[in-house]
Amino acid sequence: MKTHTDLDIFHAVVDAGTFTGAARQLGITHSAISKRIAQLEQRLGAQLLIRSTRQMRLSEAGQLYALETRELQERLRNVEQEIAEGSGALKGRIRLSCSNALGKLQVMPLLLRFMERYPEVIVDLTLSDAVVDLVHEGMDLAIRSTAQPELGLIARRLATNHRVICASPYYLASHGTPRSVPELAEHVSLLLNLSGGFNAWGLKSLPDMRCGFLSNSLETLHAACLGSRGIACLPHYLIADDLASGRLIPLLEDIRGDGADTSIYIVRPETQILPRRVRVLMDALIEGFDGCLDRGI
Image 1 (cartoon, rainbow, N blue to C red):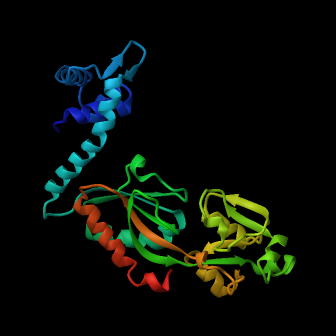
Image 2: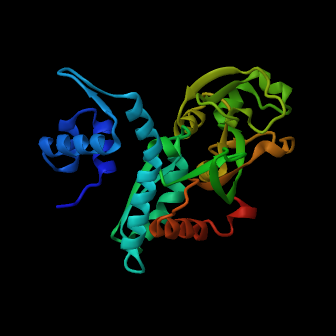
Image 3: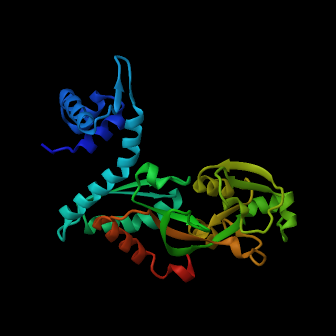
C-alpha cells in the first residue's frame, strides 16, 4: 500500500471536506486519517481542523498551514516523480488546456503522435475557449492564442495565428459588402461572449455593429457565419477550406491594423521543478509547430 505523507493526508482532508472523503480518496481508513491528523496537530502544537458533529473547518493555524504547504506538496510530488522517472520510460499524467478549435485541429494530431511514442504517459486534455487558471486548475501546460501571455506564466511563442474578417456569399448578397471600416456599422456582428481582445478584430476602432449572435465557442461562431447570420473574425486555420471553396469571403484585408493577428504560445506556471514528461511534451509541441512562426497557421 502506498505510504502517504502528513501533507498528503492533511490536504486530502481539506480538499474533500471530511475525513470520510479523504479516506476514500487515499484508500485508507477513517480512523487512520483521524489518527494521523491528531499526530500532526500534536507535533505542530496547534489545532488545524475544528471538528463538530455537523461540520469541519480550518482553524486560523490550519488556514495558514494549508496555504503555505500547498506549493510545497506539489514541488515534493514533482521531485519524487522526476526521480522515479529517471532516464527510463516516461510515465505519469500531463494536464493540458487548449481552446476547442485549436485543440482539435492543430494540437490533437501532435498529441496522438506523442502518445504513440510514450504509451505510459496519460495526457489529460481540457478544451475550453475560456482562459483557464493554470495554477488553480492544476494544469501543467496550456496552448493559447493571445496578443500577450499573462504575467506569472513562462511562455514560448509557437506560431502566428492569422485571423480573417469574413462572411458568407449569401449574407453579402443580402446586406452588401463593406468596403471600409465605417461601413461595418451597417452590418451584423458575430462575437465571442468572453473577455479579452478577440472581438476587436484587429481594428483600431470597431464600429457599433448590431450583434446577431454571441457564443463562448469559435466553432459555433464559424457555424453561424456559414449560416449567413453575420460577419465574424475567425482564425485562418479554422476556415481555410471555406475560403478556398468560396463558402466564406474575406473582407477588408487591405486595411487591417498590426493587431489583426495574435500569436499562439505554449505556457506553463512558474515552477522550480518541471517533470521530464512535461518537458518532453513541450519539446514535441514546439517541434510540431516548427516553421509556423513566420508563415502562421
